[in-house]
Length: 537
Image (cartoon, rainbow, N blue to C red; front, side, top):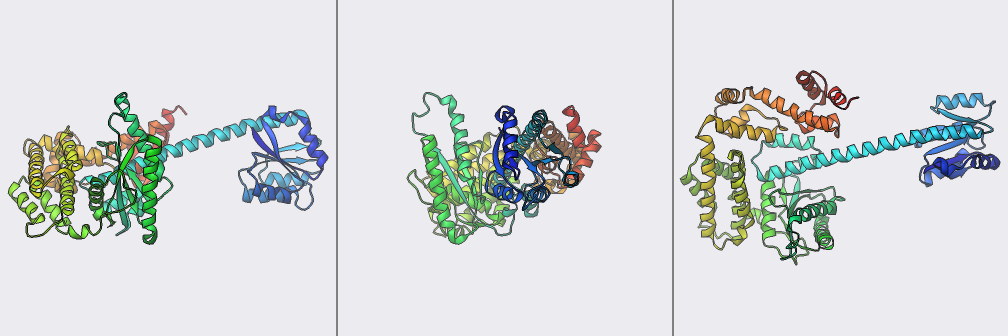
């Protein structure tokens, strides 16, 4: 039912118009009435806006033309119909100049009113359909953006990544500029739902639905807080992580308590399960993301279902100076160069027997090294993620290690497994190395990739990599990346859900015009024309 406002200084005229037809049958309802433009403006400011306004032009205090001008400024979306007599030519001329397209002559004729309302009904329905489509497009675009944001945060937490400037550029593309600020204070939180024993015995095949419901509730619980970014590990769907910006240090403690209570309450209320939550130590900037994540995992491992306050580990990162970025780089180098004695030496330096290291710091350092193992395994593991799955399980069970000796032994065994994977890829054949690099490119095509950075990452000579890539793939590295990005763009264009500027960003183009030029060069037509042809427009 569309809502109508009638404006005329004569009550008899308004009553006559109301009596002309059966308004509800025509799909309309007279919702508001006013005697002049001034009264109408006040009503429009205080009441929900109508879909259509029918207004006289000759009125006291504020005539129809002045009213239309005011409406164009305050409520430009309103449809206005002008009531006029044959002698109101100058008024009508002014109304037309203001953009009014529909009018009714006094006295209003039933058939003309019915025809006009029929036309308006069709136009309003078209408008609503367009708005629904725009809302759906925006929702899908936001969902796609959120998915890309989550993937980026998760990637930064668990994988080896590019330089800080490259990461910042990608964050800005994905509307995560607030995370790209130097030394931005933040904190991680981790929550896991604990399913009671026997709960899923009768419908274990529906476990995936419970996981999906858990993820939805976690996201919905924090959607009103702009500073909270949820993400989850695919390999452990009963767990959710949150990256939380500290925008007001004085009020942050209370915010975190509210966050914990709301999250645990919603999980228990809607899913009827308990949850365990861990709050990591506060960090500063992108370089400490892995530390923040590891500290939240450690806090989670020590938590219980009864924890209701946001108590985080304190001063832990200050005790972990042994694991600096330089030490991390050296550890990675020992593994990727298959030097077990050097790795063992580095680990013993980190876990020095001369220091009285608290067990929780020992556990934290173990988690950080496992994250390093996982990043290397993902880079060199071909067509099989079993090692990554194993390493994830080690991360989840690190709290069960009973002694420092057991931890060191476990790290040694994990390092050996990762080295075996690196050896298979690096020293078996050039084809396997190119396959690993190709897999890496396929996953990171949205970044600014260069041969130089990949050669450094995979310990190859840049010239050798260039020749080997072209020989194995059948295309230069640059051509391969371009084709990959544009093929991904073509798929998104076929889905007809995202704006062209969004698609350009998602496939790694910072400039929409450069994206359009590259697409046209490859497909013979621009992305807009390509989409229109697919849709038969």
